[in-house]
Amino acid sequence: MPDQTAATKRGSLAAKAAARVREDILSKKLVPGTTVRPEDVGRELGISQTPAREALQALRTEGFLNRTQGVGFVVAPLTADDLRDIFTAHAFLAGELTFRAVRNATETDVDELEAVHYELMAAERRKDRDRAEERNHAFHRLITQLGDSPKLAQILGIVARYIPRSFYVEVEGWDAASAQDHEAILAAFRARDADAAREAMAEHMTNAGRLLAQAFE
Image 1 (spheres, one colour):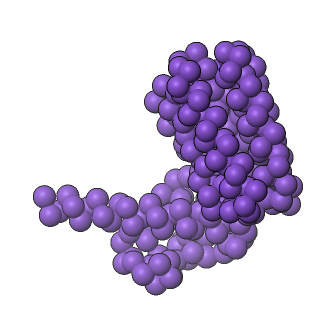
Image 2: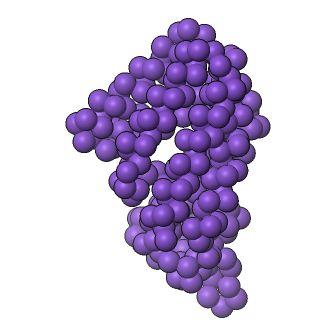
């Protein structure tokens, strides 16, 4: 049991370290070609080299880092066109999950989704970006859960790693665009129009990709 607990803790630390380095890459704090060493990551985050190394290995598997002989890990090339391609895939997957979510959702589910959206709007009016980000993620998380397609959701989660958690801070104009897109998605849920919901979600993610690519250029 102690070994299992230690492994679980190490895995959690590795996941947090990977998320931090991933954000630094997407925000261009770490640019392509930058060397990333486990000892540096461990020192910065206050963790040992073992979870730090596991984090960097995971990011290599995801395509964020490359492994170079004699150097270790370096930030892999990532272009605006790469991000557009990623969001093309994201739009398809999220759209399909939204289509299924509309067919599965109860009136209570739609009410809950609407409540999350209104909480998001309230946070935006207060300029509370942290709360807005959290409610935005909750909105999409609820739709994914309602889609009831675990494997599709798992693949979407992999693609979603290329979306900065700090989207509201990093991407200018996203808060307003997101609000309009969410209204269209909600309208489709209320109308029980699964096709319209899929189209609205796909358009939403396409808009996100366009804005992020512009910010990345």
